[in-house]
Image (cartoon, rainbow over all chains, first blue to last red; front, side, top):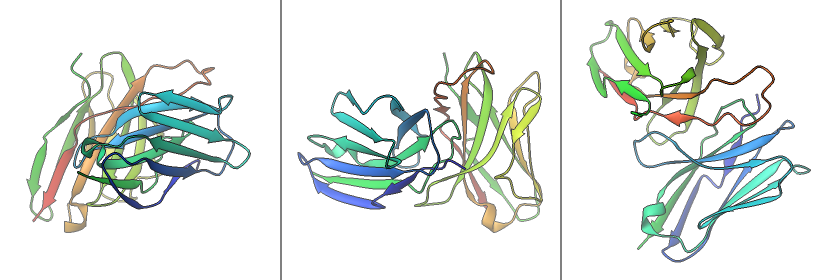
Length: 107
Length: 119
């Protein structure tokens, strides 16, 4: 299984601060994806990074990928209360998810 | 484009009854995934299907659970003789048709989920 594992399990920050969460995986991959889940809803695809990319940006999101360490990070800059959600990574095309990082942004 | 449609959104069953959850993938998608989520936990992969084929059912419990994705109609996750531990949110996701040689990313579109409560 190529299941990604996210950490930390939970993260609480103040609005305006940056939030960083990490994903580790075990086998070689050709891409890694991040998804968000608002409470009780289905996951929403956020961003995809390919194995030949080291960094990718989308609005306030910045994703990095270190294939030598088999890890990725998701940075949310200038966080907002609306960013409160759980965040999951999926490595390769296995489409198995870890337990996620539960982010709480306090207004 | 209505997205991935799941129904029912909420289902209540008594122990021993059967639960049937339906998932209509996005138009043009022929790959369907089912996941189960307990409160405050992550999504647990259950099964991956293509039209008329089960590709990976390694996450399915050995008994009482089955899934299908017929040539016509929605994918169905069936739980027989439900027990209280089956109470959870069940999510379906679909992805586009991909050629066998495709080595790119398999991006999923999720439905809103079906919440099963077993009394």
